[in-house]
Length: 130
Image 1 (cartoon, rainbow, N blue to C red):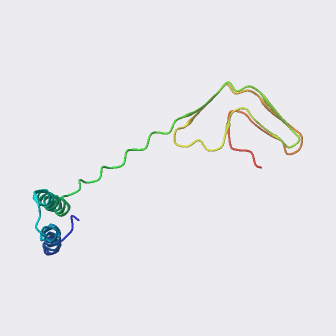
Image 2 (cartoon, rainbow, N blue to C red):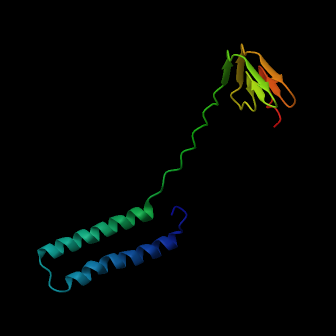
Image 3 (tube, rainbow, N blue to C red):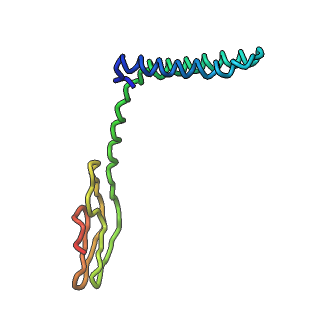
């Protein structure tokens, strides 16, 4: 609503005020008692306040999105030994992408591969082909 032209604001305001004023007016035409008069006044005041708020309220600018949290580092320490046979894969360290947090690989065990198609990775390496 912040980009509404002044002429459009006046047109919408005039139309809304006419609708707000006529609603209790029609209600009160039948000889109202004091409760109906009070209710009509309250209804009209509430309508005028809501209209004024809608026309003149400026929303606050959006806050910038929070900065992304730093990626956690990957740690692989003291993994032990592994053996692969018959086309299997033995990994005692880290394979695959690390991401922006980095990686720390220490004291990995021995990885052994026996037989055709077997793979072994110890320490930091690329993922074996599948």
